[in-house]
Image (cartoon, rainbow, N blue to C red; front, side, top):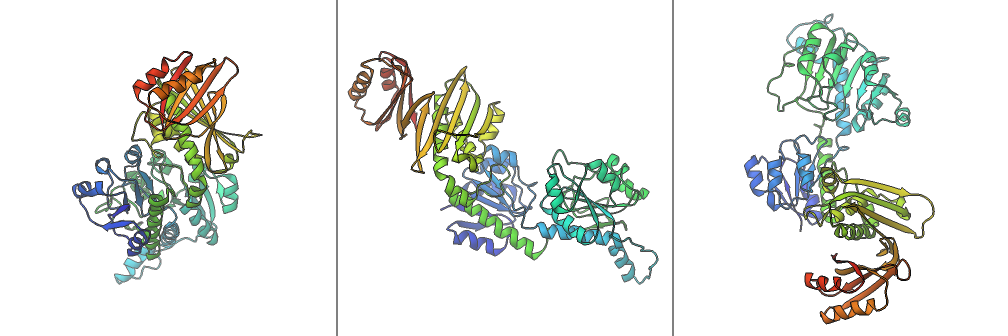
Length: 525
């Protein structure tokens, strides 16, 4: 039974979901780093919000951890590279609080336009400064949306409903998607020059850090208003303060800070700045949604292998997991076969798909192939960290879907290069779910793989098969299946023999000394 630790406050319904799915769950919130490190080795899953810091030191103690689930969007509190290196899936819930965060951004835009917080404080202090709080209408104003993904697109939709014109900057926003949303896709420089209001909805990355700095502010319109409900670190605080003091920026609304909880900030105490304590996702509906989603996602992964909203591996729905199961087995065997054949430094891996398999989600299949190829080199490899290990080792990976006719209804071919030699293995599914090899080193053959397989490459000469069978018989090795293929008479031939016993080094050495043998390998699956 998988075991999950909930380390931050989540809806009680999340606990119920885990238990209903047959997963053991502990709730231990407010753990100090050393306390978390001391117990994390007991768990297969860890569910957090933003309070718990899943650091490299914690991950190093997580001997059995398979998945970290973040109830929310941002994963700043999780060392994703360290988790990936250990083969741990990191998933978030990007849709559970999208509406709530978008509505908060719209609320702040309205509050900035009409100076509501300052007007409230003034009125409650007994003043009546009606002429002081002269706001602006939103109708006809240009809203610049930086980041038009899940949340940004909802903000754009709401702003259009308020009769605003929306200009969006997002490198991943297609022209068709922009048209569907009713926004104008623009470059960042154009957005800065035209926007009356600017709202940020992008993750904090090396590309977006300090995206609004002195230079960006200088290119904006006088009197622009800026909202940040995304991440602290997107704005250079001292540069925005200077722009607020000079009047270049009329007002700003800040919901996120570089360090949270923010006990002090240069934005505090300014009438033209609205500050809220990271309330973007703070509604009852949003907190319930993200808690339920992270519980379902983690349970699906631990029980079925389905991967949803993962940040460090290809997504694989529960339906796809069932449909791809036989293909995954085939991909695993092909990758393992190819990996065990590599005798010197691995330089490249090529994965080709033909026929029916090209219409499926092949990214998980490729991850399985890479895992199989690398496993003889490192036992800690899995679908999560296999692509990373390839990059770290400068192993070139190529995936191709081949169009046109194929000799098989479905075919996967794996080629590996290393030490100046290329090995090629291809396989298909018989009966829809039975993996079979159909080509080895360019030689056509049909073979089913068992736990122990003897691979022999030889010159096709009379008497060879008899000699091979006699050698195995003398060693007390029982043959389960015997598969042969050759290029032609007296040319290269290959034998794949499934045996019932473990193939010892001594036995393999005996086989190598049989006349006409070119190469011998003991393969395990």
